[in-house]
Each structure stands twice: as C-alpha cells, then as structure tokens.
Length: 440
Image 1: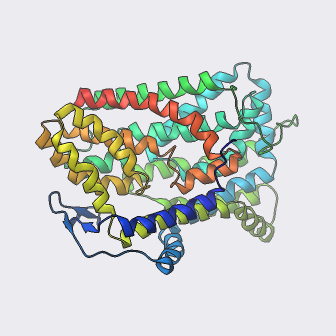
Image 2: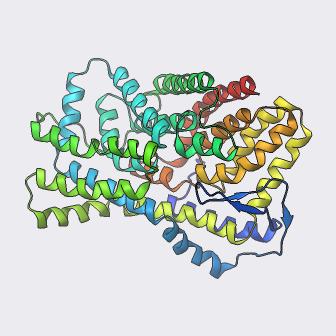
Image 3: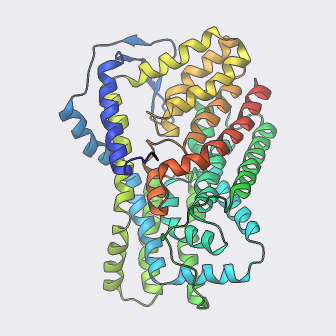
C-alpha cells in the first residue's frame, strides 16, 4: 500500500499539534540573552542554560498560535501576495506562455536551458536567500520544464533546489553565512577561496544530479498547459521585464541597505499596476485583476503563517533552548573533527522546529562558536556545518510553509519530492562535510 501524506494544510496543523505535545514532554529551559546593538536581535549567551518552570501549551493556546503565527509572518505573507499577484497577472495576459513557447521552439539543447536556469536561481539564492519568491514562478517554471521535455520535479530542482544550494553556500548571503559569521563573532568574509570553492562545487553537484534525474520518473501533471505556438510580441518582453527588473534593486538593497520583505512588497505593489496598465487595462480594471491574481496565492501565504505557528508554540513552551542544549552538549565529548562533522546533522535536526535559517543562526552560533574553541577546531568549521545542515534542509523540511506552497503549486506531493531531493541533498552535503574538514 502506497503511503500518502496529508494535504500541506493538514500537515502543518499536525506539526503545530506535535509542537504543543512536545511542550508537555520536553523540560522547559532557557539561555540568558543579550541584545545585539547592531541588529537589535536577542542573542543567547553560551553556558547560561538553566531549567525554568514548565509552561506546557494547551489546546486553546495551540489554536491561538495559528493566528499569532500568521501575524508574525505578515511581512512574508504580503510579499507572497504582491509578488505572486504580479506574476499571476502577467501569466493571465498570456505573455509568459508565448515567451516560453518561443524559447522552447528555438532551443535544440534543453539540458543547456536547465543548467542556465539552475545557475540563475543558485545565484539569487547566494545573493538574497531566495525562497518565498519562487512560489510565484512555479507555473512558468513547470511550463518551461514540460516544454523542454521534462516534468514538474525538474522544474522544482532547477529552482527551489538550486536556490537552496546557492543560499546554503553563498559566501555573501546576508541571511545565512553573513548572519552566522556575525554571531560567531567573526569578520564578514573569512577564508574566501574555500567558501567560493564550496559554492561552485555544491552548485555543480546539484546541477549534475538534476541533469542525471531529468525526465526519469518525473511528474507530469496539469499544473500548466503545453507551451503555445503563438509568437511572442515586444509587449510580452516588456511585461516580463517589468516583473524581472525589480529584483535588481532589491538584491542591491539586501546587500547594501539591509532591505527585507517589506521593500520587496513595495516594489511589486508598483509592478502589479505597471503590468496591468502596460497590458492595456485601465486603472480600475488593473486593480480588480491584481486583487483577483493575489487570490491564487492565498493558500501559499497561509502555509507560511502556519509554519510560523510552530515556532510560536515552542517558544511559548520554553523548549527550543532545551532542544538546542540537548543537541549541542554531547558534542563536547567527541573528538574535534568528528564533533565538527556531527554539527551538520545537529543543525539539520534543529531546522525542523526552527525553520528560519537566520533565526537558527542567531540561536545556535553563539553556542557553537565557543564550543568549537573548546574542541580545538576553527569557528569557520562550525559556520560551514551550520550552512550545510540548516541551509540544505530548506529544500526538505516539512515545517517550511514556502516549500509546501511550492510543492502544492507544482502539483508534486511531499513524499515524491523527498525521493528526489534527499539523495541530491546528501551528495551536496558531502561537499559541505569536506569544507568542514578543510576549515577545521
């Protein structure tokens, strides 16, 4: 009998229930914290873990955690609605179908397109930790992949998978490497040759895995119609440019001006109206179409809020610090390089309850950095272990609302995606493990 996982909405609600149950089982405890003046974040102080009074989360509190999680994720939810609405509006004009049809009709090397798209998403992942933004692109990616003779899994591999690998190993990714180095009290870019080498090797391994599996047991669903034979127009190219170009100032803003989801939402609020007006609609019609286009992203946005509810429950129960303490403490009794390698699965497991990579860096690096000093290994090794464990889990963890939203949009079941993604992620993890050994 084939095992079928529940709908993502049900899966996330079950995860909230499991988190509440854990608050009744795992002893409550906390680290002392200090405020980092530069970022305004509360940072744990290593060696200060103590037990605190139990605070189990009951049924009422668990239910209330759902709306609280949605409120906590409001910035991401708005980004999904505005960015997704703009792309859905573009798709409704038929421009994407015509442009993809033109690209597919002209190419004689479909695997070259897969490589190019994978490199593009890996670059965006390395630069700005692209994840939620991909939700809006699923329809066109599936359309492109099917036109190339592949399926929905390949579409996800060259987008979600490539972006996760690029984000995990991007030396300048401010949301993973950058924040991990900061809270490990290290300079912004250490051992650059090794870090850029790991990025190139990891992306190459993932692309090789994608190409090796492309078309094999792939999923072909009705998520997108076949590419059209209608020729693309100059207006189609203009409309595509309107939704692509804003990512350029956004990436610059992330790297130089500490931009986040609110700035991206503001950009795409303008883009949505620009697409409608450029397609020939008047202002009122554009507003109506833009809102209607956002409706297609409501489920995806809700998943993100539900995922946040899991962290809300664990924080209310004061068990997240206990989980970190329980995972980190045994490493102190393991020889240096072995302990460094064991940090990878430790970070991977921790990414289940802490689905935010930046939040995980703030939580764990102030603990893992001093621990690495005691073990006689470099702090760089601890950071690379975090990147490998937490970063690659972004394409696997069932507590990621963005991942589940992407899978739902592509009509790919979570179990089917795991059968493809886990072997590829393990191959890439070998690159990270080598990096940990070299840095140790």
